[in-house]
Each structure stands twice: as C-alpha cells, then as structure tokens.
Length: 217
Image (cartoon, rainbow, N blue to C red; front, side, top):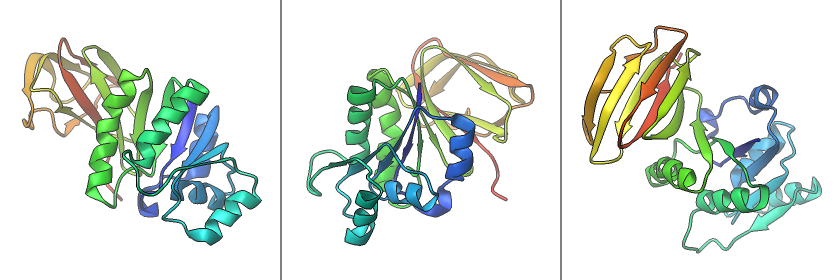
C-alpha cells in the first residue's frame, strides 16, 4: 500500500499532483500543513491534513474544514517537525509500508536536511520512503540491493551517511564499481549515469542516500 504525503515546501519544486495521483493510485493522501492546501488547489481532497497550520492562515484552514477534510492539529511550538509527526501518524494509523513525499525540498535548508534524515528514521519504523521533486528522487538503502529503473532520472548518486560504506557494486551505469568503498564526505559516487534498462546497487555494509536526478529544463 502506497501513501502520498504532500508537504508545504515551495510550489516551484512540486511535480504535478494530479499526474502523480494518476500514476501512483495511492491508498491514501495526506496533506502536511500548507501541503493540504496545495492538494485542494489541484482539486484533490486529502484523506487527512496534519500540522500546526501556522503557514496557511485562517482563510485556507476554513477551506479545508469546508471540504470536510479531517484535521489533526498540533501547537506551533513543539519538539518535532510537522513532517516527523506525520510519519508517526501514517505508521500508527494506516500502517503504511511505502510513502511517497513531495513538497519536502526547497525553501528552508534546516527543514530540507531534516527531511532527508527522515528517510533513515522512516526505515527504522518499517516504512519505505521516497522524496520527489521536479528533478530528483531520493531514497535510502541499508546493506542490501536496490534496482533503479531507467526513467526520466538519468543520473544516479550515492551519499554515504555512515562513516564508511563497503562492498559497493554498481552495474547498469556508465561508471561501474565492484566491491568499492565509499567514505562519508567522498564524492566518488556522485553523478553516475544509468545506461541500461535498470541500474543495480549492491551494498555489503553501511548506509547511503540514493539520489536519482535529471537536469532541469
């Protein structure tokens, strides 16, 4: 079961929400703070809206209520971001196994970098997460194998989030690797290119953020 979560990042980074829903056919749609309003603008009614709603104003909040959108609200001053709270709710309430997140990039760097870290947090809670924007798709891999299909994203990068990642084998890419090592902070695995129908990423130990990307038009 795949759920779509729309956060409140800058609209310029958002893919078409209608096209995304048509493609994913998600089991459920969740709006986080301003992301709930983005959904209404796209004529999509979320199953649930989560957040402190401090960024959308009373007028937009009334619109959500007028559409009978279920709201889960939190105070503006709290110990977790709206996104982390949303992860907890999606897991506890829907037992989601896969989550596609948009609206989580751009804007404030503190929120963006925290959202990237939440890829690992989500994995520890049994949720496979992808973060998308108009030019990138990010995911998380911990000591295993990932098949990356050739798509609109032509570049493939791996960023180490542990001190060392060992036993990296990359096939189906322009610059293949066999049993390589990647240290945190190294750019060895940045901006590879997918040349086959799919690229295969194998890691024996360590954790990476996998980024598929394309040049902006």
